[in-house]
Length: 343
Ligand SMILES: Cc1cc2nc3c(=O)[nH]c(=O)nc-3n(C[C@H](O)[C@H](O)[C@H](O)COP(=O)(O)OP(=O)(O)OC[C@H]3O[C@@H](n4cnc5c(N)ncnc54)[C@H](O)[C@@H]3O)c2cc1C
Image 1 (cartoon, rainbow, N blue to C red):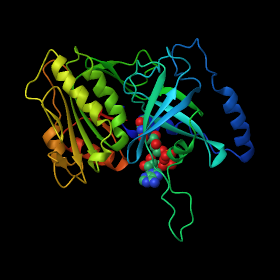
Image 2 (cartoon, protein in one colour):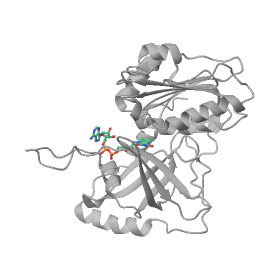
Image 3 (cartoon, rainbow, N blue to C red):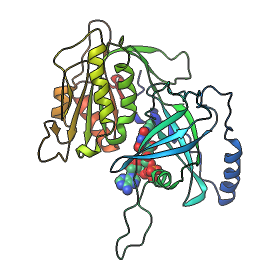
Image 4 (spheres, rainbow, N blue to C red):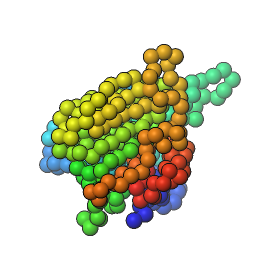
């Protein structure tokens, strides 16, 4: 099955939603329709996300977690409501553009709150803000549309969500589904190990799968996260990643010895985390340096089959240039296309 090209992942699926560009009048009509169309908060709905219509949550908090990244917390309809996002899937977030009030912006995100968490929804978002004003340069422009808008909207704003969306779902204990989650007939397959390759905010879908494996003591799937960033301060979810990796080796049945926590990650154990930095600190860094390279992937990410029918799968999420380079290297190392997932 060939499901892994860009045209078939969430980014590709997003493009299918573009059916044309609206006139000014059309935009105004759409704006009214969008406001009326979103489901109203309800104490009766046990699950927040609805794949068929937009549902609204209230922005309650913004927390700075790194120089360019914030955690956005949204309040759901009621405390007992689940988000309803399968592990590895994404949602769409829609916001009216403060710079062009007749236009809505839609982007995909992968919440970091646990899929069974109730009452709130946490989304970790890297902000692409416009550059600060400089003498002689006209202000405004240059930033990412959604992230600049999100940074500006006040707490208490109602934001639209729709989902789940995505072609990869981790069902637990080594079982994955590649294809439309809504189609019950989509076959599943078994994976014995994951190599998870990511950069920057690309950690978010990877973290979902990593945590699902680490928090289930019966899940014997092994995983190695290779996480590239500029500096130490840019490593997102570091405490959570290392906490889950450590906890896994103390709870799993197939305990693997020699685990150690070092500046460069969590080495040894069933769930490993390895960082690589392009701008490492001058002292105290014992981890890898540079981009995610062929040398690193040759060391840590060679394809393999196990005797029991399961095999290795690579999950990749990061900036387009990183994804392209990793795709070429992995194919060159002998990975089959069917075993590569690009979120
Ligand atoms: C399936 C999926 C899941 C995702 N999950 C997450 C997530 O959990 N967290 C997250 O942060 N993102 C996530 N993204 C990315 C997200 O959808 C947006 O692309 C991102 O937030 C940028 O949107 P924007 O409208 O601000 O930028 P746009 O206006 O769409 O700009 C496009 C791109 O240009 C670049 N860019 C824009 N401004 C700048 C700038 N000033 N400097 C450098 N580059 C710039 C960025 O690469 C940006 O993505 C996900 C994407 C996909 C497809």
